[in-house]
Length: 432
Image (cartoon, helix red, strand yellow):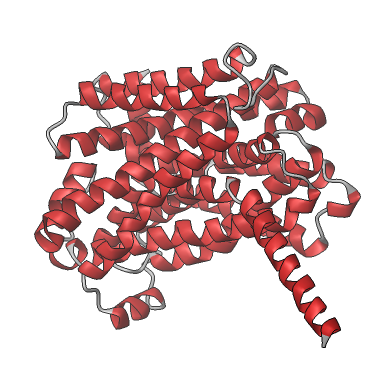
């Protein structure tokens, strides 16, 4: 009896130890996944629900394992090598390829920040706050957050803010969807011969796997000093995050499809204010305005933090300079200069009066077009940089190659079938 009691005590002790180790390792995955459901992703999800009802839920469910496998490889690389993504590219592929990767990251970062700050501008306008107050205030607060000099502080603040996105769950129930119709639409006919449908498929893929996510999560596990004993818990962190982010997207699609999609599918949903105005008659002021504003704020703020940190890690590694949130501004001037610079550039573009409507969906599509390059770098590192004990297994290589070719193929098909993309790039060239 005594021996059994001792065994029970030992088991309980192991469980408690594993639980606390899990809590210690959790963070990078949850943070990057909550940032994944950013302001642009929410607009894309709302457009998906309004235009195509529940049909695009299926693609978002398929994206859960794809997202997990991509991001799990970044954590494996970061934990086993102790190096960020840009540093590994430079080490294994040379400076030229490292520059190409970081430039692609920078383009993705600025595009994302424009989306996040325009989202926060939209939230301010819902309550009569001028963009000239809202955007500079957000930029200033996010820059001050980086001055804490501690990775853990920034991560905790980001997670707390990001969890505001969960308010979209009650909004879905307020919409009173027909769940039988939801299921039948998911597994029913898919209009694959429609170019507008392909545009939103592309935008949904671009909204869920973004170039900056690869740089962020690998940099975060390095900055957090996770080791090989944390590998199992880091994978749980990534899996939970993958499920949560896609759950939020699905919830938004359902809420919009059951309201706007059912009664006013042609409503313009190109901005935060338009989505809120369209939802309010169905969900009331609380659901359509206040709850929606809280969710958008959480999504935009955590994404702005994560995106800027990804760029800062990428450039810091490229120049071989200190790049950690645990460093002070004096110890890592390059790192903080890029963090602050990206924020300021994004804010200036939003305040400049540049039309933001064509950019929101375009940024997500641009992410889809950049993904083959970013995933290509990731796969090469997965083949070359991992130590033998953590090398990719045969079935993992097959899955990752499958994901890569699906993303590449989707990009090609989307460009071919979607005239809106041609218009988007003509618009960008016109700006230049």
